[in-house]
Length: 119
Image (spheres, rainbow, N blue to C red):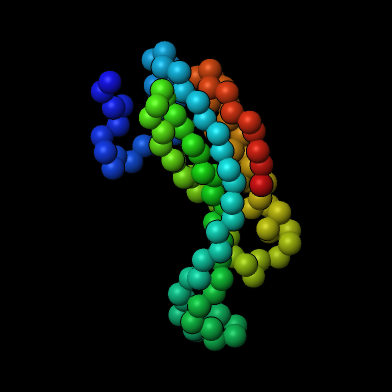
C-alpha cells in the first residue's frame, strides 16, 4: 500500500477533509489542552519591569487516520496572557470554541465524525 503522506510530511486538517471528500475513510479524534509558555518582553513594556511574561496557547491535538496511517495534527486556537482579566480569558475561550465549531462543521460536511469537545 502506498502511503498517503511522505515520511516527516506535515499534514493539516484540510488534507484529511480533502481525502474524505475524495471518498477515503477518515477517522478523527481530538484532545484539547492549554500550553503555558514564557514570552520574552522588553522590561520597559511591563509595569513590573519583568523581562518575561507568562502566556498560553489553547491547542487542539487532532489524531487523524486513513486506513493504517495515523497523523497527529496540532492546531492553535488562541493565544493569551496569563495576566489577562477573567472577562478577557472568557472571551478568548469563547473565540477558541467558535473556531472549533467551524472546524467541526467542516469535518461534518466531509462526512467525518468527531466527538465535539470545547475549552
